[in-house]
Length: 92
Image: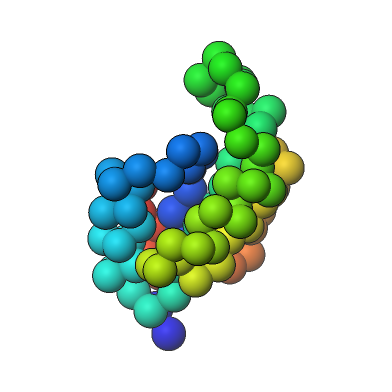
C-alpha cells in the first residue's frame, strides 16, 4: 500500500481544497491529512481559524478523497508522526 500524507489548515473547505486532496489521493492508495493545530494557524497566519481543529478534521473526513485525518497538537508532533509513519509520498 502506497501511503500519502499532506497537511494544512483546511478551515473552510472549497473547490481548490477538493482538487488538491483528489490529486494527493491519486498519488497513492491511502491519504492521511494532518490538520494543523489552532495555535499553529495563529502562529503562521496571524489569525485564528474560523473552525477548531477537531471540526476541520471532521469536515475533511467527509471528503471522498480523504481516508484519515490526524490532529497533532503542534509542529513537533506532526514531524514525529511523519517520521514514524514514513509515508511514501508527501504532497505539499
